[in-house]
Length: 636
Image (cartoon, rainbow, N blue to C red; front, side, top):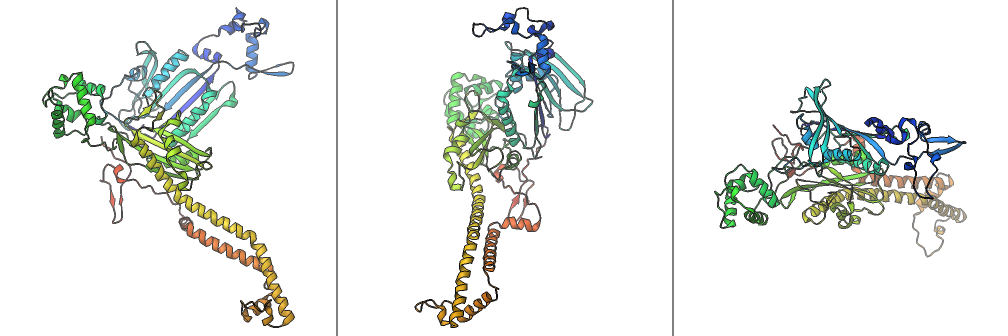
C-alpha cells in the first residue's frame, strides 16, 4: 500500500472447523464415522490398559454422534446433561485480504512458493523480520493439513492504474527442492475494478491457547498503523457463542513516505557481502567499485584506501582479481576507517510523532500521552531512528510499567524482558524525578526503532539487545524527553489536586470555625450589655484592646439585629475559600480557561527538528519561525 500511496485496509477471517467439517471441505471421510456405521475395529478407539480400558459398547456410533452434534455438543440421557468431549484437533480456514498493489501474474509462484528467492543489491528499511510470512503460511498449511493455498490478486503497475485482469492461483510447495508446485494458475477479467491480494489457507492449530496473542498483536498493530483499517473476524459454527469480531477504524490519513534503498555503508560490510558485491559489480576497476557500489566513498578517499592496502592493490585492478585474502584485508580496512560520513537516516521511514500519538489515543484512550523522536544516529554504518511515547492511564493498562515494542513498525510480542526498551524503562529512567509513581501509576512505554538493519538477538528475532550503546542511549534520551513533557502536565495536575485538597480541608472546618467565632462575638455582646462600658469589654486589664470602639459597637449592633449570625459567618467563609481557590485554579490552568472562553477546539501542535525534513522548498518563513511540511514529496 505504501509504494502506491493507498491507505491500507486489511481484514482477517478465521473460521474454526471440526474434523468432520474439515474432511467435508477437503473431500475426505472420517474412518470412524464412515457409512453411518460403527467402526470396523472398535479396539483401535479404546485406550489400552486395565484401568483405562472401556467397554466396546460404550463407543457411540455415528447416529449418536450426530445427535450430540445437533444438540450443540450436549446430549440428554435420563434427564442428565453431559458435555461432549472436545475434538483433540481443530482446523481453521484463514482468509486474509488487503487493498495493496498486488502481485504480477507471472511472479506469484516464486514470490509465495520459493523460500529465500530474493537478493540484496542495496539496503533498505523493510517491514517484518524474515521476509517469509506468506511462505511460512504455505509451509504450515502443507505440514498440518497438506492443503494448498489459494491466491487471488490484482496488480497495480502504476498509482491510480487498475489492472483489467486479476489472477487466481492454487499453489503448493516442494519442500525438498524449494520450488513452487502450481496446481492452478489463471487470469480472469476484473469487472469490479478490484485491487489487492487475498490469500486463503487451511491450517490446524489451537485458537484458545493463542487467542490472547493474536488480539494483542492486532491491538499493537493498530497503534503503530493508525492510518490503516484493521478487522479480525472469528467464527465457530458449532459454538456460535464464541464468535468474535474486532475492528480498528482509520484515525489518520497521513501515511509515512516509503523507505528508500541506499548503498551499503563501508562500516557495515562483511566478507560475504563484499564478495557478493564484487561478483555483481558492473565496474571494471577497484577504484570505481569503491566509489559507485559503496556509500560515503569519494574518488579521493578511494585512492587513499587503495594506497593504504599496500602491495597487491592498485587503482586500475579488476574487482575479479581480489581473492579471499584480499577481500578479508579490504573488509578489515573498511571497518577500521573513521573518515566515512555517517549515514543521515533520510532513507528511513519512521511513523512520526503525530501518528504515534493518534494511534495510542485511539486504542488505549490514556489520560496523558507524550511523544518524542530522537535525532537519526547510526551503529556500525547502519542508520536508525528511535521514536518513543509514554502514556499515563488508559483502558486495559495495568499498574506499573507496560512496555510495547516495535521494530520497523512491526510489533514484538515475545522475550520482552531482554529487550533494550524494557531494560531502559525498568532501570535507566528515574520516574520519581518526573512526578511519576512507576509502581502505582498505569504507565505505558512505547518504543519504535526503524533501521536498515535491526540488530535482533536470538534466532526468533523477538527482541533487540541492550549491548549496542548508540541504540540504548537514543532510547533513554527519547523516554526522558517524553517524561519531561509529562512532568509539566503532572506538576500542574498535582498543583490543582493540592488546591482541591486544601479547599476540601478548609470547607471541612468552616462549621466549627464559624461556630467558635459567633460564640466569641456573642460573649462580647453580653459583656457590653452588662457593663455598658467600652473599657470593660476586655476580660483582663493587662490585655491590649485589639479593636477600636466603633468596630466593636458596629459588630455588636449587627449581632443584636440578627444581621450577623453563625450561618452568615459560615456563608462568608465559604465564599472566601471558593473565590481564592477559583483564582488559583484559573492561574494554574490558564490555557484551559482560554480554550473555554474562545469556544474553539484547540489541536495539539507537534514540533519536529529540521534535520528530519529533506528539502526546504516548501518552507513558509516568518521573522520568528520557519514552517516546513512533514511529508516528503517524491517524483517518479
